[in-house]
Every structure is written in C-alpha cells, then in structure tokens.
Amino acid sequence: MTKQQKLLTFNLFLLTFVLGTSEFVMVGLLTEVAEDMTIAISAAGSLVSAFALSFAIGTPIFTALFSRFSKRPLILALIGVFIAGNMITAISRSYGLLLASRVITAVVTGVLIGLAMAVASETMPPEKRGSVISIIFTGFTVASVLGVPLGTSIGQWGGWHLSYWFATLLGIVSLLASYATIPKGLKGARSSLKKQLRLFAYPRIVLAFFIPALSIGATYSVYTYLAPLLQDVLLVPAQYISLVFLLYGVVSIFSTLIGGKLAARHGTGKIRFVFLAQAVILASLFVSSGSLVGGLISISCMALVVYLMNSTMQLYFIDWAGRHVPEARDLASSLTSVSINVGIAMGSALGGFVTTNMKLIDLSWSGGIVAVLAAVLAFINDRLERGDRRASAFKEETELSGQYGESM
Image 1 (cartoon, helix red, strand yellow):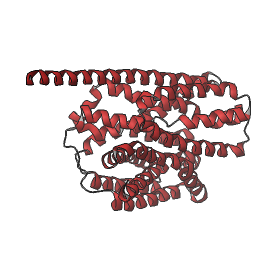
Image 2 (cartoon, helix red, strand yellow):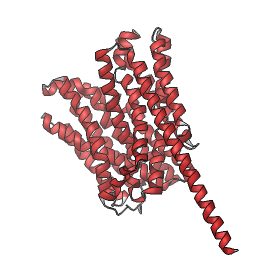
Image 3 (spheres, helix red, strand yellow):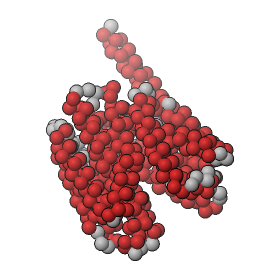
C-alpha cells in the first residue's frame, strides 16, 4: 500500500474508534445519568436500546438517501453532525433532549460506518481490502477496551456530561484527520431510494443479513449478562470483574484482525465452521464454569471467535451488490454494522428471557443453539453461491462455444 493509503486506513480506524467510544460509553454511565436526571435505571437503559434501534432502522434509509453525494464532503459533513450531536448530549438537562441527541448520533454513526467501509473498498488494492476492513472494525473493539473505560472514568470523575465533551473532542480530531486523508473524487451513485432499497428484494441478501445477526446474538446472549455470570457462577470477586472484561476486549481485537485474513481466503466458504466452533465454545461454558480457570478459558475463546465473520460478511455484501445492484453498494456497505446491532438486540432479549425463566448458566447452551442456526444459514448461503458460480461458468462456456461455432 502507498503512504496515503496507510494514512487513510489509520484515519478510518480512528473514525470507528471515535464512533464506538461515543456509542458504548453510555453503558458505563447509566447509573450517573439516572441519578443526575432522577430517572429509573431502566429509563437510562432505554437510551442504549434507542441508539441500537435508531442505528438499525435509520442507517439503511439515510445511507441510501445520501449515496448520491460525493463521499469526501459527505463524510466531513456527517462528522460535523456527529460532533453537534455529542455537544447536545453534553449540554442536555432533560431526558427528551438527551434521547433526541442519541437518536441523531446513532443514525449518523451508522451512515459513517458504511461510508468508511465503502471508501476502503474503493481505494485499497483488492488483495488488501479484507485486512483493511478488519482494521477499521478493530476501531470499535479498541473503543470498548480503551475509549469506553477512559470515557467512563472521566464521567465518574467530572460528571457524565464531561464524557460527551470528551467524545466531542475526539470527533473534532477525527474531522481534521478525515479532511487531511480522505481523497477527493469518490463519486456517489445517482440513484433513487426506491432503486437502492430494491437490494432487500433479493432473498439472498435477506438470508445473508441474518448470518452476522445470529452470530452476534449468540455471543451477546451471554455477554450481556457476563458480569452476573462471573460473580454468581464463576465466583469472581467484584473488584476483578473489570479485569475480565478487559481480557475479553483485548482478545476480541485479535478476533477482528484474524477475521481480515479469513476474508482474504474465501471466508464465505469457511465461516460456517467458525460458527460451529462458536457454538461449541459457548456450550462449553456450561461445563467449564465448574472451575474459575476453565470458565475464563471459555470466555477468552468466546472473545476470539466473536468478530471472525465481520470482514468476510462486509466484503460479501459489497461485492454481491456490485454484481447485482451496483447503485446500492453504499447501502450494502452498511449492512454488516446494521446486522450486528440487530444481533445485539436479539441476544440481549434472549438473555433476558433465559435469565428470567431458567438458570444463569443456561445462557451458555442457548447461545450455542443460536450459533448453530448461524452456521446453517452460512452453509445454505455458500451452497447457493457455489451454484451461482457453476451456472455462470456454464453460461460463459456455452456462449464461447456458440461464438466458436459461428466463426467456423
């Protein structure tokens, strides 16, 4: 890669780090927000749900609407809106204003992620796209490992409002970096919203959409309730739980990076085995939870496989749209992140059902079942892809034979 491409890769990594920090830091500040605004903790928690829901619904719609614009000015403008959204969050004194600011920020976050992936796909050498996209995804993981703890500490020290002034500052840094590194001339696709949303008329896209959703949902059914699992099942002292989360975050960084290498080696044909391994690892927690060391090994392995499919599915959506609905490539580039947010919501809901009606440790095998479902969908999708390739090869061979016969 050229020096400019390396700088661009770093900037896109920085952008997702900033977006991830702003999104996830609210989880660590729910108590402070609830106390400051004198609302129930469940009302504060709904800010997280509202963000994920707005992300999932708004991202594909606004990505399709904005796709006609050139990418450089669009990204710079959206980062400006992101900065404004965090400033409004930082000055919010009412729940309504706070909720509105998080909804706006969620939609902008989703569109920016899709644009970052589209820029990487269009500007990087074909053999490097998988690894670059994995680096961009790593920004979110690093945000959970470094950005969120730092933002939470700032909020606990100086009030939760200060955490979002910190996110605002990060946004300004990202804006300056984007201005310096994002190349000019990345044109948009002039197409109507109706034509782009035609992407969802293809059953293959709908099927593929639920592959990452089920995989992430399998993990998040356990991860959402990891703290009580650690404390009540593995008997980890409360003061060490944050260290386990740090361990999980560090290991998950490697998951994203390894996922980039998988994407470069026909990942769509292999990810079903990743999901089967994920199912075994999640189910293993049911047995390994009998010992602290065994339980921690299962949790570390869970982190190691959680993001292996990200780059593969990202490239799949972009390339599939490029072949069948070229005007919707930008929309397709947002589908992985949207699917992941849907999966987080699904996993949290499943975890809530299990913990209400069963034992905490039953989260392990129930999450494993969901991972098996992801493997089944991945298997079906790969079979369909192989059939398409054979049909395409046969068609080309037939056409060549016909041309040869005519020349005779």
